[in-house]
Image 1 (spheres, protein in one colour):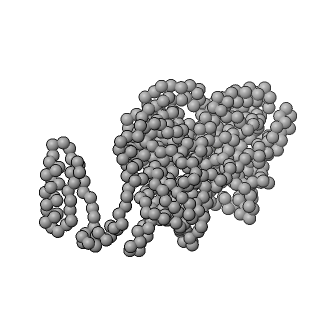
Image 2 (cartoon, rainbow, N blue to C red):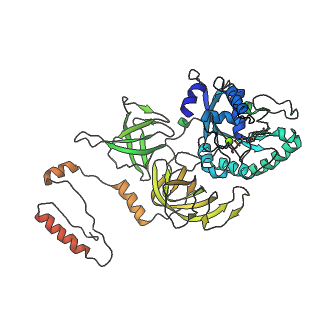
Image 3 (cartoon, rainbow, N blue to C red):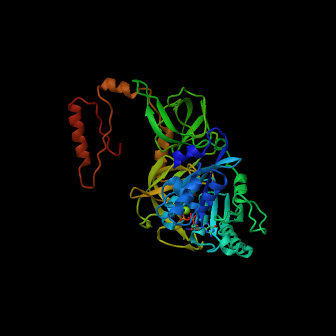
Length: 502
Ligand code: GTP
Ligand code: MG
């Protein structure tokens, strides 16, 4: 429905601000019903949809559900539970909302996380009759971990508990206590009935004891995140392209401006290497060169000096705070893989544009997202959250998730599937091994020659290449190298054999 219904529901002529809100909570606590209600009460449904769904229910003699409205928009009515993540759109007088309906079932925790990671705020639904359940807490915990600070709690199905203030107060108190343990102060807790439409768009007559805001009033006062353009530059390098013309050894460094901006003439630093240069041009794709590009723009830059940059590097402005770099970092991770996450196995870690093999150097503790208890363990099971230390095979540049989402959040791949994700909490001291120091020195202290590689190729009539001969113990590598050098020399190549001591 994403594309089609966007057209019918969203009015392109309005220039209203957009806001992403995810609806989470335990299975069957009424998330989809709440959304259906919001769509209906704000007149956001396509003409005749409500009547059509009601009529369909009558024909099939089943009770009408507001959640069916979403299914009807989505054509996914099969089991009446939200399997995938559905998005729908509506607008209040103030804004356009993109509502992400996350599934409540534990099997679909990954979808919930994907949905939540795109949201700026969340509404967490708790069934008044069932009270706080496992996923009410787990979802709350994951929202906090994903850095979603604006959380509105809705105690739903108040009609099922006779609109009792006592029931509401008990649940509110219990859930507030849980949230305060994870340092979250909810925006508010609102008693509602999705089915009856109490305190969603219109104030409820059934709960005169509640004098606070309705759900929609709260939504309109949720705050947009501060503009990402005001932040420091983070430009993860996606690709490096060569100019195709002969003798043009310039490179275009391509990527997406995640935060901040790039201006021609900026002094920039690439991490983890620490190499520096200046932005010479900003090359658009199919657009003329520009002087400046901002957040969200996919672009390419050329540099004033030729330095070796590769995909996965992070370009930042030299005057901004530097990212961290190293091979060990502390992270908070949630694991969704069917197989447990183990200590001495390699996993692929992806964040920004970087992909690198990592293993777990240490499991600090495993945390129960429901009871918030800490345990010492040697592996991490499905649905567990843990604080760990990662060891990567090569140096990486990263930030803490609190500072920069783009370079502070990651996913872990096991068997070609996303099996976990998390946030970076900081660098761990990896005692900078000798090799790391030498690699870093090569990156920053390399002195380049005035003679271009192409000139040497012309002189020697063959391009340059390096052949590394390595083997297990007991094989005569030196002998092989010497024979090879002899034969290549006799065949007319300019060739030198260098033994390790050289
Ligand atoms: P999942 O997507 O499967 O996690 O469920 P959900 O949270 O989206 O729940 P859904 O909206 O599908 O509602 C589950 C059941 O609760 C349905 O039978 C609804 O009719 C019922 N329900 C939802 N809101 C209310 C309410 O305010 N009052 C009453 N009495 N029932 C409600
Ligand atoms: Mg649902």
